[in-house]
Image (cartoon, rainbow, N blue to C red; front, side, top):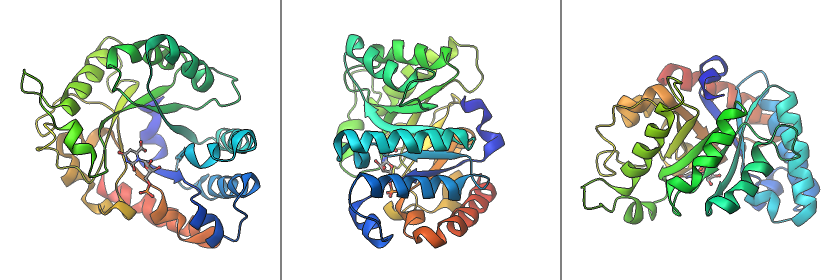
Amino acid sequence: MLGVFDDVGRLCVGIDPHESLLTAWGLPVDASGVRDFGLRVVEATAGVAGIVKPQVAFFERFGSAGFAALEDVLAAARSAGLLVIGDVKRGEIGSSMAGYAAAWLTVGAPLEVDALTLNPYLGVDDLHDTFAAASSAGKGAFVLAATSNPAGARVQSTRSPDGRTLARTVLDDVASWNRGTGDALGPIGVVIGATVDLASAGLGDVTAALPVLAPGFGHQGAHTGEARQIYGNLSGGVIVSESRSLLLAGPDGIEHAIVERAAEVRGAL
Ligand SMILES: O=C(O)c1cc(=O)[nH]c(=O)n1[C@@H]1O[C@H](COP(=O)(O)O)[C@@H](O)[C@H]1O
């Protein structure tokens, strides 16, 4: 599915209904609030940018009602023609991953998305069946390699005896799996935060082309206009993801904020 993102643009609008944002938007801090928030972001994104990324944590906090709200938001996004990345950061032993793959990547499932975020710290090999499930359904996944939060580097920049950082090992494993699919960019991508120094993370000399989900712009400090400089050789696969910096525009200003940022991203990449 990720091969089509050049048609829909490289801006991904995060749907992160933080409690403070719900209040600022005049919405109740409950499942109906996150549902209305999500639907409004979907409506504002449709026709302006092509990708949304609901952060599942903010729906999950309301239990089954929150998941029902998420299902409505996912259905609305998909029927508006948006690509949906489920920000779920799942990672398990292979047998348990099968449950997550069935939940999120099965066509027609209540929580069906086009791609999901995956945590590799139980081993990338245990994600292979999920990669295959995504690929065979025409979907994708993004595996955390070098995350945008400052604490991530201490784990992800540690080096193995062969000299590669953990982030690089994850990226190399994903790129190698993609090569087996024969798809030029590959269905499986990595997450690399825009706040990360690629050289320190051991990613400065990557030559493989693969999709890169790029959070860390806006609220976390990176500037959209610098995307090409930040990602260097990896720029060709970058999807710029922003949540709070767009969502703070409120229900009336969000569409305008997305229009402006989508144009900036087009100019930057
Ligand atoms: O997988 C992600 O999307 C992600 C990875 C990462 O390294 N850093 C990161 O911030 N994210 C997510 O991206 C969003 C960033 O939100 P803002 O900082 O408001 O743009 C949140 O939903 C985070 O969970």
